[in-house]
Length: 168
Image 1: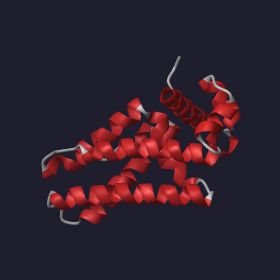
Image 2: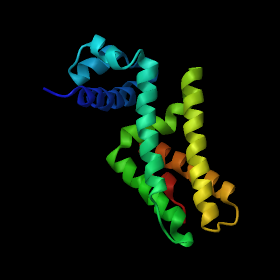
Image 3: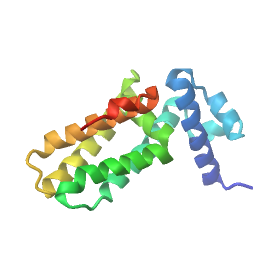
Image 4: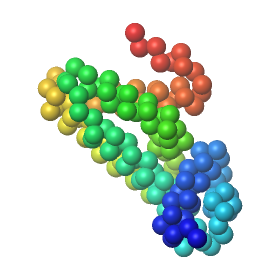
């Protein structure tokens, strides 16, 4: 028998796939429950509604991104590239999750948008601080550029247009 927390993680894992495949508005808790092999009421045992479930998915993915960038320890001249490599590793290992985070700003639900806004603010703040500590000349602009490239990487992945990623 799978433990309760394991079932919650199973629901979150399957929610990522359903949200990625169907988008927030077309995804249903019934589809997520079916994919997870649980009943819909069991999903509601952990999450009061689809919005709360989506936020939990975003929280888990945002935490993964934050922790990956927090863990980067590189010389100043390699910091942005090293964080970029961490992002690309996450795109390979948790592609649907990362794409959901990077596209979640487009969801018009106020609670979700405000939540996502805070997650992006925290990551921007972290990257700014890392660049500042490394002596980067304009850390706020560097952090903005870094996040902008992350969005471009995500678009290139979703559209299967690697030629968008020619930076040299």
